[in-house]
Image 1 (cartoon, helix red, strand yellow):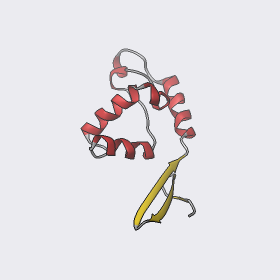
Image 2 (cartoon, helix red, strand yellow):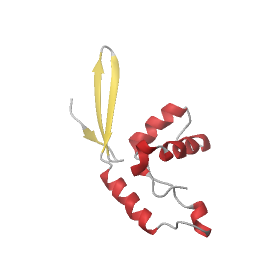
Image 3 (cartoon, helix red, strand yellow):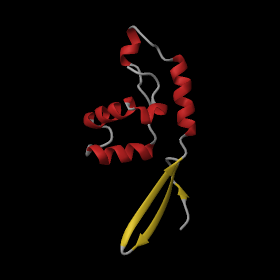
Image 4 (cartoon, one colour):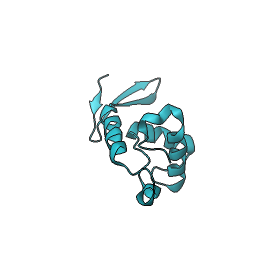
Length: 100
């Protein structure tokens, strides 16, 4: 099967196997990592605005995965708290802009 690029910049491949539809998704995240680094360079570190600054950005494919893991919809408060915990984990440090 061939991969197709959707409007969100996510590569998708659909495959039917044993009567089941298997959807595989992939996303190039280098641009997102570069953007996070650029935002980290200008983000406030302390005082005033630092209390409400952006923590990080995550790719859509990862957001879908985390939504399934925590059982909450993307955009919900529960999902946001789960994302914050995952961003503080060392495995996802590249998605962080600055630590809180």
